[in-house]
Image (cartoon, rainbow, N blue to C red):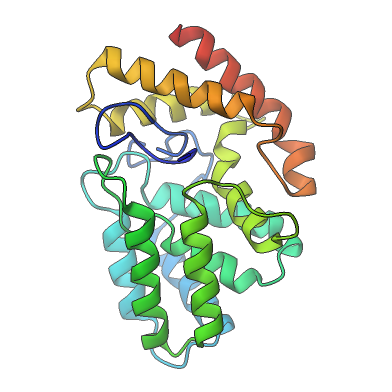
Length: 243
């Protein structure tokens, strides 16, 4: 169940919940700059144990996040997820691993492909040892990236809960921006512009129903308290509009 990704190999059968415009795409990430993200990456890499210059890796990651096929999986989405990770950091057993996983979780992204998470995890498995990050943390980062296929962390997986909640927080919109969710939904459609309208509506509706059928969308106490109810309202309203 890809609750956060695009389509089912371009058919529109999983027209996801994590798909923008290259701007803020309703995520509420606000203003962000590549320079700020590079500074953050340097701090994160050092905290995770890197002993080599992290700058070239920031360049490659930010270039990947800025690829032209992206409409939501952009640096704006990255910045937003990192902001949400900050909110949830105290919940995680290894906040540095969670933050690294946020950087890598959509580093490889093609909306017409289904292996994005696996390829992103493999990228982390290659890059992090080169930076000098130890094998255990590298394995944890890769595991977390792969977890974003399902957004279904096991009970007690606090790292997984923090990352998945941060990634899905876009569903809750923003209390200070009533149009945030609508912009996000429009961004999803833009990312899958190659999918015909009828197929997209059918696929997107199926994703929304599946999400609404889950016993809970968020696993952290903060996510449950602050994001669950507005996310369900937004999902239900979008489903009603589609059907």
